[in-house]
Image 1 (cartoon, rainbow, N blue to C red):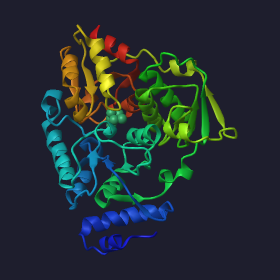
Image 2 (image 1 turned 180 degrees about the vertical axis):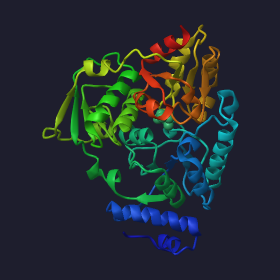
Image 3 (image 1 turned 120 degrees about the vertical axis):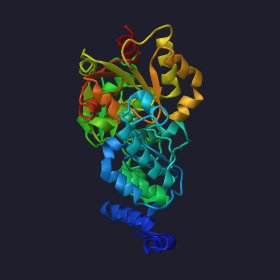
Image 4 (image 1 turned 90 degrees about the vertical axis):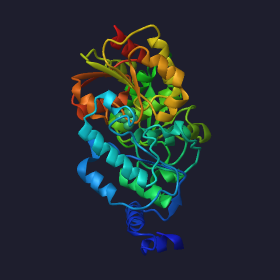
Length: 387
Ligand code: F3S
């Protein structure tokens, strides 16, 4: 790999052991994947933030590091809302360890905007090179924005934040961003909600694995795209997808899809995922809610009281900018929490069944929370929580 003189000095240890080791990690990754150089990045998003997922050894490793991020970098959701963990019922012992993880990241210069939707907080543009690690954020950045990131592991994204660079391979190169399989949706998608697109993603992810799909027959809005990509990244390993006439690279490039395998998906295959399963709580905001999703939830809850726990997850920045909407939601007894989510918070393990409006949560809740998961539209979620 071609390295800059500055990089050589870091590798020689002139800026301390942490930066040296982190750059060694990036160079090793680059060599494995055939990168010819490191590319400067605009931002990083670092996963491995919940104590539930990284545990004691992850915390020990983070605490041993000593360097500062040189580009804007944010953290993925953690196991609790930082300001309201007692109210959520988080165990104090867990909270103490989670706070230690957060403090370690803060010392490393990672902003404590603990979210999988960093694109609502800071502008990311078409063609930007970035190093993000939460899979739904990666999918959104690549597919909906047209930025360029591989599906980074937590340590790789942290190393990139500290170096300000990442190895230039994979989805950083335009030649690797072409469609590899066509998903022809045969369903009538007029009136489809984010839950329908999440269910389509849940189904499609299993069909395509880690290939780059090109969808025809759908016209999702940005929230629909977010739901579709998040679910495909969970049941498959999709880091980039295109939607005919909708996503920026599909609009800009005339992709030749004639020779690609085509898989047809019918509406019945999606609808059968909407099963009636007993639930004890409802959780929406996977990925974290957009302002438009918060508005829709507030409208559905108007004049109602929740009869079972209803959790709404969003980033602190989106909550702060939509205070009135959040107050309207919480007036019903629902809780709008920042920093965390239904999958990475240990609190959700107390429920035997959770209703969600997200294909990604449908995939992860059973394994990560131990309970059953049911998918429904946001409207159905609110109805189940309030009736
Ligand atoms: Fe985000 Fe948690 Fe879902 S990190 S994508 S809300 S599983």
